[in-house]
Amino acid sequence: MRRKIEKATSRYILENEGESTRLEAQARIQAYSIESELSHLNLRAGMRILDAGCGTGLVTRHLSTLGKSLLLECCDFSDLRLSAAHAQFRKENIEARLYKAD
Image 1 (tube, rainbow, N blue to C red):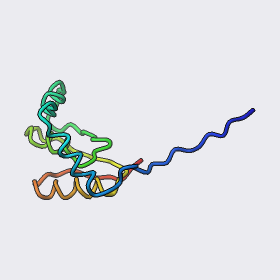
Image 2: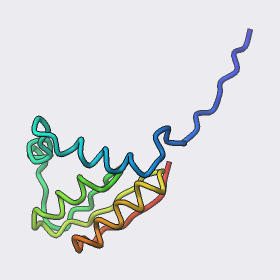
Image 3: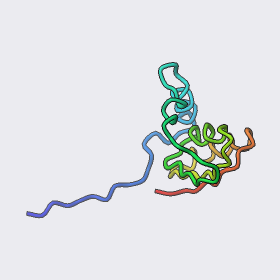
């Protein structure tokens, strides 16, 4: 007997404007430290970094503060998340490429 395999959709179940705010707040809780989470990376000037599933761009924004002249690229499948990331990048004068991708 064959089982039908359903194709997964790339629809984000929490696709609403408030989710961007929630994700930003979650990343700023005292128990979480993006600095310590990324401290093991051996980054060098000119490296190309892909922030896959970038959400609101929190990781990219942190990487941009390291002064390493990194080539930052971000992708997400949520138009709302990409829009939020783009707005933050413009506000903070961060140069990064944004892509919509599954």
